[in-house]
Amino acid sequence: MFFIDDPEYTKHGYYLVNGIKTFSKFEAWQLSNNNTDNIKFIFNDDLFSTYDWSKEPEEDIYELYRRRAYQLRKDYDYIVLLYSGGIDSQVMLETFLENNLRIDEICSFANNDVQDKDVKFNQEIFSAAVPFINTLDLNKLGTKYRLVNIGKMVTEQMSNKYHLENFKHYSISTPLWRTAVTNHILKANIADHRKLTEQGKSVCYLWGHEKPSIRIKDQHYCVAISDGFAFGLGAKQYNNRQILKNDFDNFYDEAFYICREFPEISIKQAHMLADLMLATAPDDISVKPIWEIPIFGPWVLYKWGDKK
Image (cartoon, rainbow, N blue to C red; front, side, top):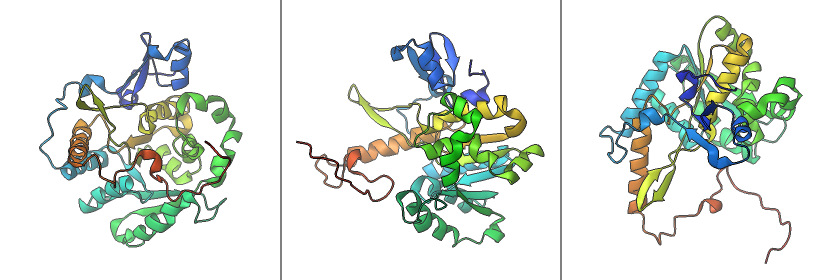
């Protein structure tokens, strides 16, 4: 089974199928006998269920972010803050900066080794992330900045025999660039991070995830927790540190916002979002359905045929 009952991994979520636990979505499907109704996703139910989610935490959201940053700084020797320049990673970065908490390294991903800087994937990096980094005095902060070109890494990842045969167990990420950077593929390509782990140092890759997802059920706002991006981190860490442990021991991945350590962050975010939804008029023309929002920058449309 692709599982170990250790809170270091289960805190990121796992699947329960007919009494059997697994981190692998593929394995969960196999165990379900193709009946997905048999699959239950568990995300810290034991802890989260002890909180009254109808009550908004009194603390300011930025105070909760500050506490989370302090906890991470205390727990890990070397923090790599993964930074795209988008709002999630920007708030995470500014939380550390404004509270004078050291960031050992800021890391951004681009693929200008295979594409131009103005393609959709690179737009945010070169128009937002890099310009902001250039405003910082990194020497004074004691912070290293690393821009990793992942184009070839993404296109060549399946030449890794182990990854080709096993990625279905530890990766549920799409698109393909995420399978490379969230799994051991990226870590294998950064020699100084591996050297730190070989010296017994804990290296934490810090991700700006996960946003609250609001649903309406029985005329009440509810928070839906599904097995999205952040919740695959347990499977990845299990693979890296339990199966590939000789090479990837002491590597950790953490989602900054949704976490077992601070459920109050998710509860506070949910209340803030619900308040905004309640204050927004149904006919507000600024509100757009998700399919009209260019999530990763301007869309390029190609006409493939008429649909009537």
